Length: 412
Image (cartoon, rainbow, N blue to C red):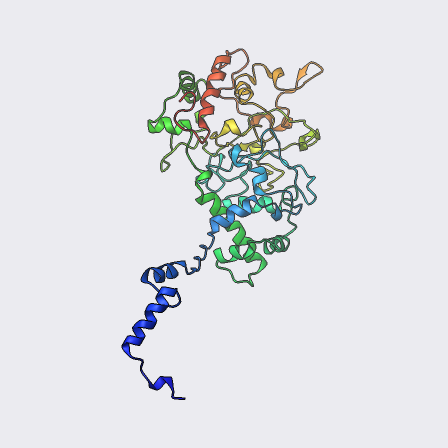
């Protein structure tokens, strides 16, 4: 049989065959069909962008797997809806290796800390800066590391124990990639990377410094205070009345665009003792001396600092109850009234034993001279620096410091 490859079909025959095939749908491909076929071809989806260190830090912040008990995360003590302070009406979530340990102090908000600076004591003996209630951490990295190894909190026994938990995370590879670490990273490298990720999250994410309160809107000219809120701000700033701004700056400091409502200084306020069974001070022999210990020991000999704690920001203060380092006050109204009447009506705040008021009951007698006594702490025999109405006005102003304000809200 002759080879077909050696013969060419007549042109008429080719045209006839082509027409038959097209009519039957058997071989002709229209230009439209070719386009549809090309369009329908599957495409390979783009690979997701690798996580940044801040995004990994977000996951770590929420992850209870970093704790020895598997029950506690950074977010357990720093709840976003509560201004990144303790959960509503709680002292501290239980921690420790088995999740049964009670921590020592209330969790302060971790917002608006970027300008705190390192802890220092100036030539006049005034402490300033640092993180935690006693300033023992001089950076966000030290602050992030502390709870991870605190035996009453996340309770990792050592770096090796935490590294084991980090390697077991489903996003462990994301952490290594974001930190530019090899799969063979050492325990120290992995833990340092996790801490750096937590720092980047708190530094880069706007939720830790949003400046979205009504106060900010008023400063920007997009809202106005109610008459009561304005009275409260005036009292807040008045050095003879509320005198709050002497520690809680209501105006921006040089180099800062917005007011932080703290100057990161330290004071002994003589707050009442919290005798709840959930606190260490339920033991009458125990005293939390702040700068003098027990969580830092380098200043134990500086007796003039005993009882001093860092001034927290008042931004979001309406969300962060209970108040003070020992969670001894449940409401803002009581906090402001305490300032106004601490020394005028001490029986309202301190226990009375055998007819004697036990003033400044959360400090040993040897350190009670350290307690602040300037305005608004009125001396016995004086009129209170703030009346009951003044207290309500100041509280109304403090409520304007909560983030998340939008125009159109009641009172805006």
